Image (cartoon, rainbow, N blue to C red; front, side):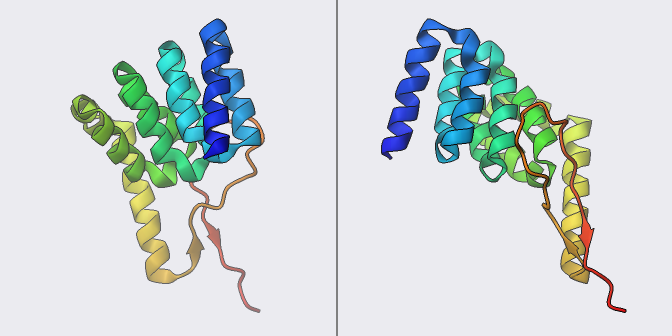
Amino acid sequence: KDRVEVALAVTRTVLSKRPTLALTLVEKISQVAPETIGAVAALAAELSPKQAEEIARIAANYAPEQAAQIASGVAKAAPASAANVARRVVGVVPEFSDKITEAVVSAVPSSKAEIESDATLVLVSSIARNIRSSAALTGAAKIGSRPVRNSPTNAPSTVIVNPEPRST
């Protein structure tokens, strides 16, 4: 809890003076205190709403397991960008697309129609569900195998399916 409070205080102080540093600040805090990134990303988006989509992308890149929380917090802080926040975070962590879109719609109900009519989000969700179903049926795939995330400049990743080694 102390780390979250410190990270939020730093975010508030820095961005109140230099809001253009939002992306750099989110990236650096993600690296040193990833457990704080959901709260930090939401506050950064509140203080720099024009950068909300990129804030969400960077945060999800460093903490993919927190993607739904990040997307929800950022969308709530910058509701006009809610659907775009969902798109950016799903682009980084497609295997959590259903959870991400549900979290954003829950945080910003007015985004529901746009999110549900977005062909790309619907397609990504469908593919992720099919891969999970196939993996569950065959037991032959692992979902969510990800490259090490060391830079927000990495291109958005895709779902990677790694088959089990064949026995000879």
